Length: 305
Length: 274
Picture 1 (tube, rainbow over the protein chains, first blue to last red):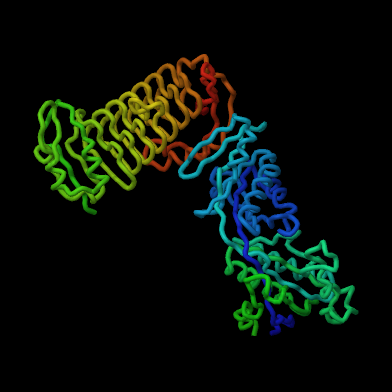
Picture 2: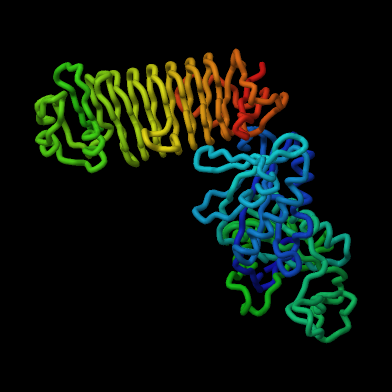
C-alpha cells in the first residue's frame, strides 16, 4: 500500500494491556494548572523505568471543571492497579500538592476505584477535614496558600499501552516534520496520550540485550549509523527513523489515533522526504493487541485514490 | 404513574404512632393486610382501616399521605432506599427519624426531632421544623449520619445537635444553639440565626449569610479566605429546588472562625462576605 508516495508496510503494531486513570488538575489559571500537570507527567515515559506512562490529555474550560476554575486532564497508564495507585499518589503528593493554588478531582467514572487523596490527607497533620459532596468524599488540607482540595478516590479502567508508528525518512528534519504533523493530529483526540518527550521517540527499543542486566536495549536494526550490518532494515536512502508511542483507553481510541497519525504523515508525502511507515512489534507473542497498519488505513487509502 | 394514597379520615388530638406506614412502604405490604392491623389512638385500640382510607398498593410510589396533622408522630420513620413518601399537611415529632434512604416530602410543618438519627436520603419540609432537626435519636450519642434535609421555612433550637454527617439546609431562620455538640457535617441557612451557635462543636461546617450577634469566645477568627470547596458545596446545594439556587457557585469568599476551642474543637463557622 502506497499513499502519496509513502509506503505503508504490511505489518502491525503490538500493544499491551494496561490499567489507566484520569485526573483533573485545576488551578487559579492555566499557567499553574499546566505547571502541576507537566511536573506530574515528567519522568513518566515508559513503565519500564518510570513505573507509569503519563501525559496531558487536554485542557478543560472552567465551566467544565468541578470547582469552576481552569483545568487540565491527565492520563496515567501502568501495568497493574497497585503500581498505578502508588505512582498516582506519589506524583500528586510531590507535584500537585506542592504547586500553588491547585486542586485535584477524579476524571473517570468507574466502579473500580483507586486512592487519590485518601493517604495524602495525612499531610494535614490532623487539621485536614473531609466533606462528602454527592457520592464523592473530598479532603481539605490546609496549606500555606489556603487549602488543597483533593478527592478521596478516582476511577480506573483497563486500557492499552504501546500502540506505535515508525517513520522512515530521508533525513532527521524530514522525520521530525512527519512526527510533528502526526503528533499534532493525534493530540487533538480524547482518551489518548503520547508519553514520550513531545510525543516522539528516537530511542526505540528491542527486547533484551547482550548485557544480562538489561531487559531492553537499542533497536539496532533501525539505527541508520549501523546500516552496514546485515540485520539492519533501513534502505540506502533512509537516514532517520522515529517512533510515536500511543497509549489509549480503548482499542478504538488507539486505532483512531494511529489512523490520524498516518494520515497526517501521508498528507506530507514522499515529496517531503518521508519514505515509509511501519509498526513496532515483537513477533506478536508479547502483546495481545495487534494494530495492522494497512487495515487501519484502508478507508484513508480509498480517499487518496 | 400510579400513587398509593393514605388518608386520615377523622380528626384527633391524641398522638398517633405512624411507624406502621413506613413498615408497609418498606415491605410493600398488601393494603388489605395493613387495614386489619391494629393501632392505638389514645387509650383506644382500633384497626388502621377504621381511621385511614388506603387506595392502591404500597408497592406503588410515591405514597401520598393526606390530611396529616401535628398529632402524627414518626411519619417516614426508617424509610428505605427508593421509597418516596409525600405528606400533605403537618406532621408531629420524629418525622423521618432513622431515615435510611429514599425521599420524604412534607408539605407542611414538622415538630421536634425531625430527621433524628437519619443516615441517608432526602427530607424536604415546605414549612417550618421545630427543635432538634437532624439531632441524635433519644438514647443515641450521635446525630444524623448522612443524607440531606432541606427546610424551606425556619427551624427551632438545637438544629443539628450532635450532627455526625450530612447536610442541613434551611432557607429561613435558625433558632438558638445551632450546631451544638456538632461532630461533623454541614449546616447552612439564608436567614438569621440565634444565640450560642456551634457551642461544643468539634468538627463540621456552619455556613451563614450573616455573622451571629454573639460569636462564642471559643471561636477564633481565622481571617477572610476564598475556599474552593465552597464551589463544590454550592453545586450540591443548588441541585435542590429552593432559594439556594440563587447563590452563585463561585461565591466562596468567607470569614472563617474555628471552634469550639473550649472542647478542643476544630469545627468552622463560615460567614459569607459580599
